[in-house]
Length: 495
Ligand SMILES: [Zn+2]
Image 1 (cartoon, rainbow, N blue to C red):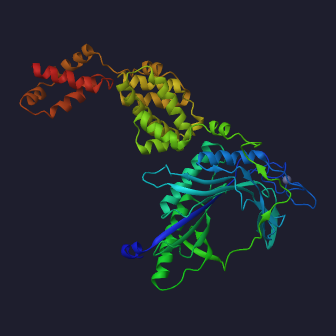
Image 2 (cartoon, rainbow, N blue to C red; image 1 turned 180 degrees about the horizontal axis):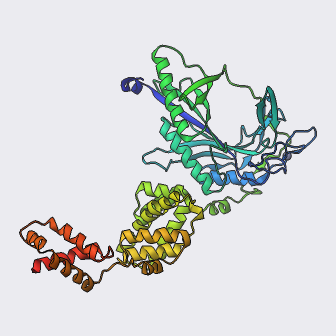
Image 3 (cartoon, protein in one colour; image 1 turned 90 degrees about the vertical axis):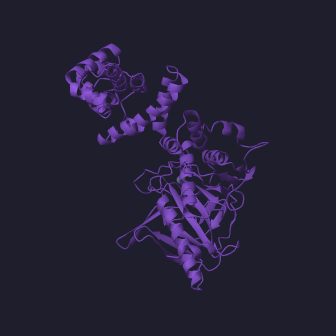
């Protein structure tokens, strides 16, 4: 471990390269299905994605539209003219011996995103977002190598940030926030475990504002691992430099078990991919005169994005940061929450409304989800309707049921969506708030406990709690505790 004092001498710089698979119907340059769930190897293949001689690729404009959507959501400039290039290298998972990518004219440039899932994180600048094709998949079995080309030439989007990040946490929250935006736009499920999103990090440290020798870390399979890999690399590089050694430019892999990075490939100079424009694919006029896409139309189709939604939830419902973040990340819970709030909105005044929204959040996130988890039911399979949940919230805010009774009702209605009012009546859960009825219980209790009354009058106020408990018992738990306390005090002072 290096000391804080030594650490302060160094300035870490981090850049991210994030790949993700857009959900298009077809592959990037042919009409084979883009089906990530296909298990049978070499089913979704054709002469084009297998690179037979003489075939011609065509550009999948659905993928282009998705990348433009993302670019607009991330405040990018959308290039007027864009084109594809060949990146030449030989590897068995690449049937063409080159990959079609965008080396010079990517679709999206100069964007930005403030990671919005945690507080106090600075904006991350996005250098570019481009489209390319994926490679096939190799598997090594019993000394033999098998090739599956189902993935070959499926579309892949790569986002490259500027080297503007200085710690692991910012990188993690950026990648997490990006995942939420990808899901908002239905561009990709971006599930890291399924390989639908891959994060690579470039890390360097230096003692001034020049960039030090960087290492690239791959094989990162979760957002947490990205953060840990960055923090580990920063520490490792500082230790080397402190010992007077040099950082070797290399590709390193993240070992999730040992929590370290290990050298995979030493890089001597830049790789030479001999990029050149793909002569088989036309240059695209993306927008503007004779352009393929209407940017205003696409912009208007984006809907409310999670960074805006989070701000709105906080403002409109007075929710805390954490709660708003929980809702934007859990979209179906958020929808249920907002639908319930809208049902309640017209039935109460403004003061009660904010109280109701807090109740809705707490009952939904703590009780409903807790009950569903204990019953092994997914939220999306919830039987309870917004209408009946709103009715229950109405019973609670109007003091018709105690919180204990509300939970008993909830247990029932989340299973069969029954009417909470009927459940309340059938089970005698109605709270007694009627003054006269409560006064009757109170007077009975006071009559039965003269000793406690004397104690109270001699100043032992604590005895009040005992009397409240006794009265609750008489009301069989259905008495409103606030009302009971109020009437008890009133009657005790009369005695
Ligand atoms: Zn194909």
